[in-house]
Figure 1: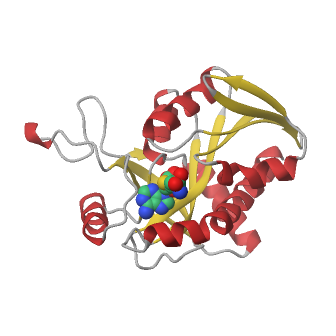
Figure 2: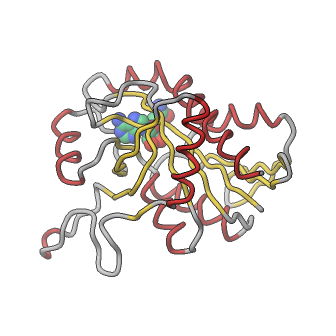
Amino acid sequence: MKIAIMGAMPEEIAPILEKLGTYKTTQYAKNNYYEASYKGVDLVIAYSKIGKVFSTLTATTMIEHFGAEKLLFSGVAGAISPALKVGDLVVATKLSQHDLDITAFGHPFGYVPEGSVYVETDKELIALSKLVAHEMNKNVKEGVIATGDQFVANEERKNWIGATFSADALEMEGASVAVVCDALDVPFFILRAISDAADMDASFSFDEFLQTSAQESAEFVMKMVDKLAR
Ligand code: SAH
């Protein structure tokens, strides 16, 4: 089995590469892909760079070029739900693009013809994450994640996204990865650790907590890989 582990930024995959120690680096489509064998499964790991376009390219490459059969995303996000605090883990049940807008034609936000407002994540991987959360004694929340090509550092925008999409957290890559995996029929899992509250202090909070939150998320995802390897 070949599993893709993806992040958006170097900090999000660094803990994983560190854990593996040795890996093969391949350059493709102006990005680095790291391949390793881990507990009997083949891994392909990469950070895409930030945003929907780069994450689309990387997810597609991991599947179509490197042959990934499952995809796990690990990274950080801004909290919308007041119940989510810095360092908390959130598993996406479904994702939507909050900046996709052809509402002028009477469509809902996040919708284009032949697409759907939400893309649902794989139920089996979510079930597996519950097992891992239990074993790690971690409180992992499930929720809706909204994605857009904006770093949200604005209470009003955050609340609008929360209300429009019933979203609990927001980030910049999940929904595009979801669209790719759904179209190519690859089970996928999106995990985020909260780095900020998407408010006026978001950039400071992000800078302060990126590393520790990314580490939290990466550790959890590697525990998922341990389970999948069995
Ligand atoms: N510090 C970076 C930019 C980070 S952009 C630089 O200067 O180069 C934010 C990244 O973290 C994105 O990959 C996104 O998925 C996630 N993220 C965390 N908090 C976010 C927020 N409040 N709004 C949007 N994305 C957020």
